[in-house]
Image 1 (spheres, helix red, strand yellow):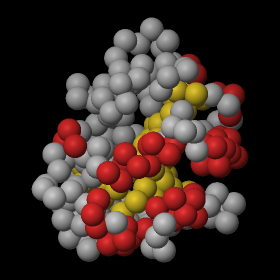
Image 2 (image 1 turned 45 degrees about the vertical axis):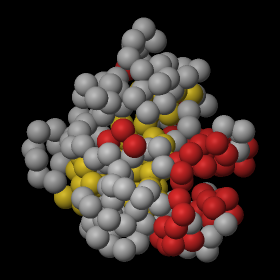
Image 3 (image 1 turned 180 degrees about the vertical axis):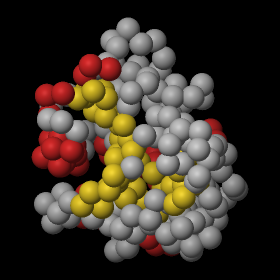
Image 4 (image 1 turned 90 degrees about the vertical axis):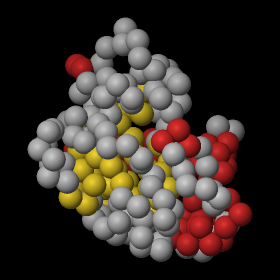
Amino acid sequence: MKIYTYDTTIFDFRKLLLEHFECSDLQKLHESHSDWVPKKELTFSEESRTLFHKNFYEKLSKPWSDFIELYRSFVEKQIASHVGGESKFIFQALPSFRLHLPNEKAIHKVHFDSDEDHRHPPGEKNVFLPMTDCLPNNTLWAESSPGKCDFSPMLLSYGEYAVWDGNKCAHYNKSNTEKLTRVSFDFRLLAKSDYDPTYERTSYTSSTKFILGEYYDEL
């Protein structure tokens, strides 16, 4: 895993989220929208289908031009320099929205992205981009290399992001006992040399094929 910093005044995703959710503090999103908090404990099949997720993805599908343009600019100007140049990789067309609510988990299964439940093609790299500071019990826990089982928390601060091998390294969440919500995005990168346009599997969460024009996009 490698951790990088970026200029939050240039790539101000948080401002867009605060405006969209009409709140002043993303860490207290569960308080400002308490009626959206699930009444019962979430399960694996429900973890990305809360009212918070529904609201975000509905806005994104309209489409949310300001957000999408900022995301593509982030990939082009920030990510490309760290993975060998913008012409050499493709990327997840729209990022995944993650919400780790108090007393909940954002990820319910210990898994790696290319396992049989999640079905991602081999070779992807993951980008973890938090919109709030990460605390020990409301962040990702991941192993340092596949099969090592030496899980440790990704304690990133707002203004940092991690590029790491979530495709093969197992990861999970603990129950959030921090009393603060963690809001983050994650997305995948794939070297063009690893891209297989005939790959038949589909994304568990979005039901899109792992091909350009569906799950992936390019600059």
